[in-house]
Image (cartoon, rainbow, N blue to C red; front, side, top):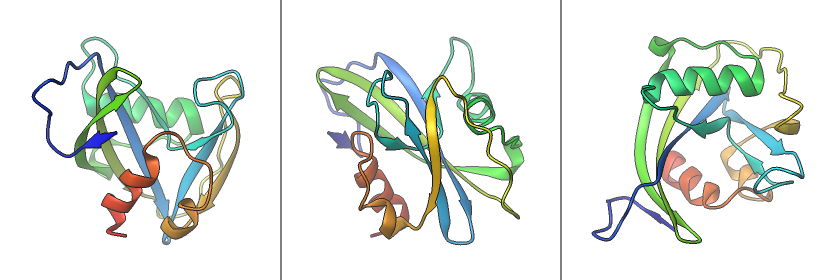
Length: 143
């Protein structure tokens, strides 16, 4: 379940960043390896924020590690922070977006992802995504 405001009983266990990597009305989805949590499901380039790491640095790192795309802090914007509760785990979900001027080569992390696809916001609602990504996409794209 996602919340737009922090619930009174919320106990943040970690911070997670995610990025809508966009190009000409589509954005990048990555299919998780079967052995990972949410295995076989589609998600954004995303991951946990390291101890002492800023959200912005975490986004740069995660996009690079998971796609091979190098972005700069001045190239993306922070969208919103959501509070997520999944199976008793509370975490803050910090969303970002970057618009690519051209399609860049994607180099997946074989350990984490098995394939990628560029989808429109509407198309993304039709695939099997990780928990609450549909809701986040609806919020971001006003669907």
